[in-house]
Length: 389
Image 1: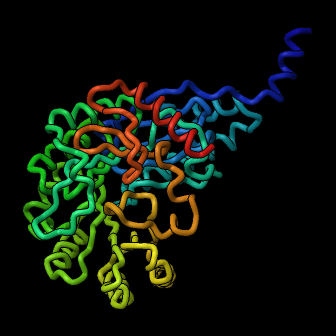
Image 2: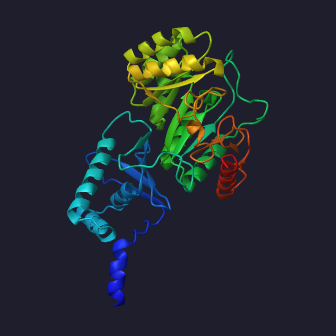
Image 3: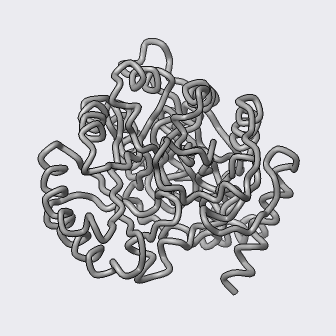
C-alpha cells in the first residue's frame, strides 16, 4: 500500500534540482569542432553554461538539466530516459528536446563573433531576479591611469596603489573557484598595463570569458591587437572618439578580427549634434552592438534620440556591460532596471583590490586579496538587500 501511495505522490511532486556545483566537459580530439563546456548549476536548478570560455549562456532549470546531461557525456537515449524518469514527459519528447539543445550548443561552438552573454529561449527568468550562488561577472579596474591629456574622472585620490600581475591572477583564481564565469578588464585605461596580455591569457587558461573596456587607441597597432587576440580576448567594449582618426583606424582593425565588439559613445554637449552621422557611419562599417552614455543628465533628450536612431539602424543597444567612469546609462536614466544587478549579478574590483557593488557605488564591501570569497559574497548580499529594502 505504501508503495502505491509513494507512486501517486511522485506524480505530483516536483523533481528535485540536480546537485549544485561546477561541471566541465572537453570534446574528444576527433570532434568536428573542438570545444569545452563549463556548467554552473544553482541550488534552485537554473544554471550558467560557458561555451569555449567565450560565451555565457543563462539557462532556466529545464535547459540547465539538458546541459548537465550533455556535460556528463550522456547519449540522447540516456538523457531521454533520465528526463522521463524525473518528469511526466514521454521518452520520445525528452529525446527530441535534448537533441535540439545539443544542436544549439554545436551551432554556438561553430559560430564566430558571438555576443559574450546569451539566453536560450527556454522560457528564461528576467535577469537579476533570481537568487544565485555567485555573481555572473567581475569588473576589474586594473588601473586608474589614463593617457596624457585625457579627462580624468576615475577616483585616483581614493586608490593609492595597483595590484601586481600575480595578485590579479590570484583574484581570478578565487573568482573562478567561486563560480564567476565572466571577467571584464577596465580602468582607467587597461592597455597602459604592460601585463594586460598576461592577465588575459591567465583568465582564458582557467576557463573564464574575458572582455576588455578600452579607448582602443593602442589597437590601431595590428601587432598589439594580435597579441591580445592570441592571449584569448573574447569581447571588446571600444570607447570610440569620433573626432580622432586613430580611433577610427583602431575600430576598423578590431571589426576585421574574430572578436565580438561593442562600440561605446559618450554624449557631450559638443558631440550631440554630430551623433546621427556617427551612428550612420558605424552602421556602414559593420558595427552590430552599441553602448551609449551621457556626460550629464541635461543630455537626456539627446540620449533618447540616439537610442531611437540606433533602433532604426538595427543596432543592438547594450546596457549591462560597464561603461566609462562617471557616465550615465541611457536606461538607468529612466528606470532602475539597468542598475539592478549591481552587487548581485556583478561586482567591481578597484586597482588596489577593494570590492564595490558596482563602478561609482563607493561602498567598500571588502578586499579581494585579503579576504575570503564567502566573506565578500556575504557582505555583498547584505549590502544589496539593505539598498533595495
